[in-house]
Length: 239
Image (tube, rainbow, N blue to C red; front, side, top):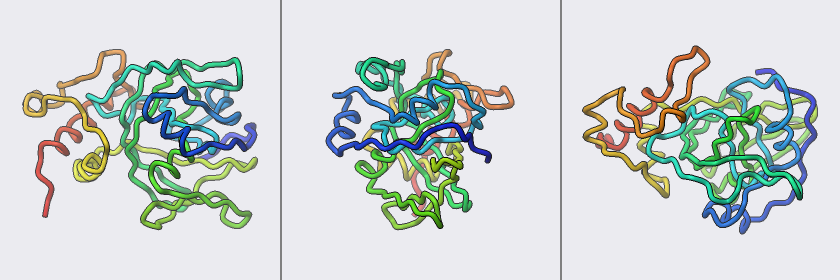
């Protein structure tokens, strides 16, 4: 995965309290300078690339790949704050389930609420949210670049652009067993009529038409994730 080279590394302090207030919808989220550039400026960024932003207080999802049906919320905080006078629109959030894949091939399953910003040039992850909300940590050195450590101690080595920014490759999670575990540990659940949705199969949707996402081949990716999410909720876990 080839990364863009023109962005500057972010160096902005984010506190635990700020991240928690943003998560509760009590405070307007913000991006670092690099996150802002990724959201605003033109660049040849792969569809699957996620910028790991250490100055963002919440994550940005450019497409709805990985967004779980039945989790849409209208945002009332006014979008993402950039500097003192600029705000980028993000009118709603979704609970998103996705794989983060590193340069070493290791991957981590994630589920978190993210702001939908279709005008952004790439998906953006919040390192402070990873640290303060999910007990993860990051290291950075000249030998290994940027490395993410999960709460269980497992490591995922990020892709690095020449200017020192870290990136993940992402894929939506469609495995029901993985989604089941993530949803069991999440602080919220999708709002859906599971028996009716299962009966309707791939045609069921709890998202407005304008929120349906398209994959790179032009086909809808919503039904696949719907079937996985419905299966994750409706099917008992294996013992």
